[in-house]
Length: 104
Ligand SMILES: Nc1ncnc2c1ncn2[C@@H]1O[C@H](COP(=O)(O)OP(=O)(O)OP(=O)(O)O)[C@@H](O)[C@H]1O
Ligand SMILES: [Mg+2]
Image (cartoon, rainbow, N blue to C red; front, side):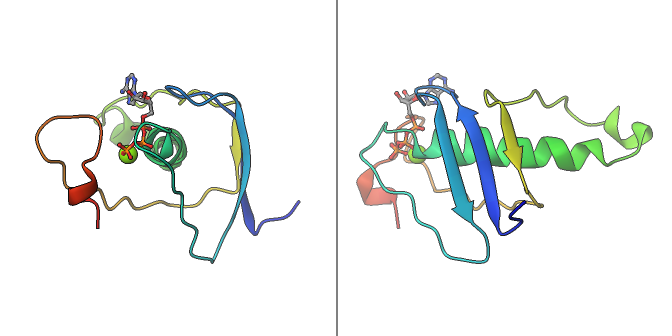
């Protein structure tokens, strides 16, 4: 299997319509699209959530019972994930949608 790609199978978080996608590793990859098209749903709510869940699974039972329970995101499988770091965008107010003026 090709370890140089993150393989996402059947992502259906929020408004995602059963997305299959292969994301190359060790490259700068950019997701673009209009507000509400599902960029955050794919990256934060699906891929990052699963990376966190897989990471926490490697912790001891002692540590795990002291951490918030992470549920599996709405996706069939994500292969070749490694530890993920999220740098979130600053939100203006509490709106789920990002303001174009606040995205840098
Ligand atoms: N936690 C949630 N619960 C229910 N629906 C959600 C949730 N988060 C996002 N959505 C919906 O899913 C759709 C995709 O939203 P998402 O935030 O992924 O879009 P986006 O491309 O990141 O937009 P933006 O450019 O504004 O950040 C929208 O219709 C949004 O209302
Ligand atoms: Mg977003």
